[in-house]
Image 1 (cartoon, rainbow, N blue to C red):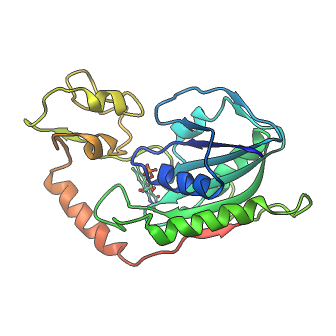
Image 2: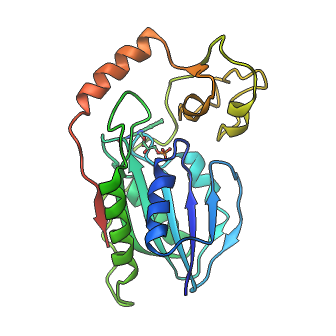
Length: 248
Ligand SMILES: Cc1cc2nc3c(=O)[nH]c(=O)nc-3n(C[C@H](O)[C@H](O)[C@H](O)COP(=O)(O)O)c2cc1C
């Protein structure tokens, strides 16, 4: 029985959820390497491993920080399924970039999926991934892993050179008077962009909104007029449901 390892960068949890659904369909996983929390993991995988590798799409690319944190992972012809999740706009070159990265590090990419999840900004596809998505993710991973040894390379959509992107957004979460300085946001920020007084450090922030989603007091927020009007227009623009794409 092969050992399943999940590797993900997932500030708001969509990617993690889809990878866990895939693992569940395979009977579970033995380790989760969470790049959101572990900045420089080192692992070697062999032929008896299966790695499911996931990241969100930031500006049509995988987040640069996620790519950097993958550097210490090496496969040796290890079967790997790559997954990007995106907020219903598009994934552009992110899936190709993740597949290329995995191959360059010794993995055999047997499947690639571009999945829709709730967008970080606005109110877009807020219930996704939903049950239908997660069931399809599970079916896909089984298909991908049952490809024959000599199957042709998986054709992954995207362009090289990749478009510019992957650097995070321009929104900087605010901290309201409701903040009790519990420090949860400080600990959970994937890039250490929140100072001890729970105030966001503008330079380093990715706009991933993990702090907003996790703050137990609702103190982290993006309550500005500029954000609200952007979010409203963006939500309207991306209201038509896109479907997941699976390649193997
Ligand atoms: C800075 C930033 C850039 C994003 N860029 C895109 C994009 O180009 N296309 C898209 O459809 N969604 C985009 N999104 C939405 C995320 O890709 C989506 O919500 C993703 O599922 C989040 O994954 P996570 O929950 O695992 O963190 C972006 C989100 C952020 C924070």
